[in-house]
Figure 1 (spheres, rainbow over the protein chains, first blue to last red):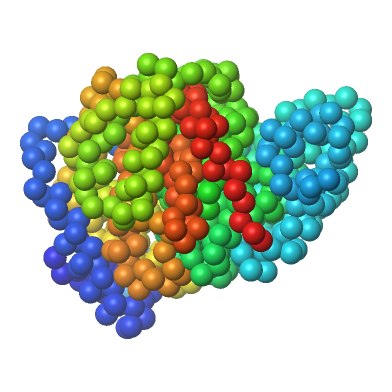
Figure 2 (cartoon, one colour):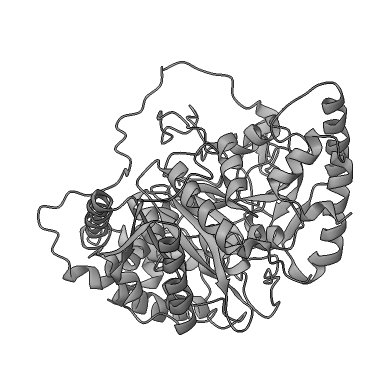
Length: 94
Length: 470
């Protein structure tokens, strides 16, 4: 299986150098070839295991609890605007 | 008197309780050993400058009657555990200035139990690796021979415990990250049952597989630590309500009549000859201890690693998506090569059109692997296998071949896929004086059985008494 590295990097929001793109294309192909041995296992009718200890629907009461203070939440960012996180523009006017 | 940092956790607690020495004296000996040995080993990323202040505080508390179980015991954390006010890096450039504003539940529990925090330990960044080389803070070296890897990802945890820089250390285990380095450094590594120990505040790798363990000098020490860390946490909904037993209770109980299984798929695949021979000796020890040892089969073993290397990167790509460089940390191009590789792999297998062929298929094979273990545990009480198909390898040997590195995990990933506990115990040395280990596997929530089996084995073999010359 050959991966379209540029496309996947875009989906992953992961900037890659040209050297990395080339290297990963080769390495990921060999890893995928290895994991594709799973195709030889008959899994017809087999349920998936996504939660291994069989817990289901663990919920809590829908109540607010004491959480981080605003200044603590902002302690590790350089990207602040008037007490909020400043993020890049998501919508454009075009 | 021999140096206090050489003590086991049990001995340290006993000495502190009996006022044979103070926490300040014990902590000073650990700090001296760090000063002396860590230039060669590189186990620590950050030292907690308040260690002696904490120790003084612990001594004061003891004088006023405080009887917390780990009062004054110096412990170090793998740098994936959030420690309030103390830098936590995940061994990655992304978080090299990150100061957590809260403690992980395990950190909080251990603090409440009275520990002294020595600092934060090196590991493969984000937990990605089997050698300790995938770090932005320089490889950790194996204290038994600094040309060799200490195993990963909890490399600094294993190396620091083995070289007596701390009394015990925490680790994580997603596919063997506590058990493999324990085996490579001649210490004890625990991967508890999935959901036995809270993961809240520990940087996530692969959420359906991650378990929170620790590395200790003896099996007894492992039981003492789990007593503190195990239990339900409302902040981690994957933790279990099953009551936490007294883990020290089974220690010293005979193994007579206990059925121990040897899965043929783990021995018939052409392991390194020395691993093969040492594992054979281990089987004999269990027979000598009165256990009934017989061969079993886990038929889907050969697919486990492929299954793991689909599920794990897929979940990594999702968990690492939060590192956007906005709320904390730096931007995504600062991920190291291994994290980038796994993000790419996981993003691909989860992308439109490929989900069924890879992720869903792997989750189905996971069910078959889990069923194999359930069937096996109808026949036997516990299973033993080598931890690794080879002894420790030289630094640099596998770093350019990711697939080769991934194959180091073949014996350990199965426990994570099945959610069962595993305990790695020293099993002797190669001709080159490099450590090896066996792992004891049991049904979900059978940690006390693993401690019983591991304790009996280490008491007759006494490999834990051997220490590296460093």
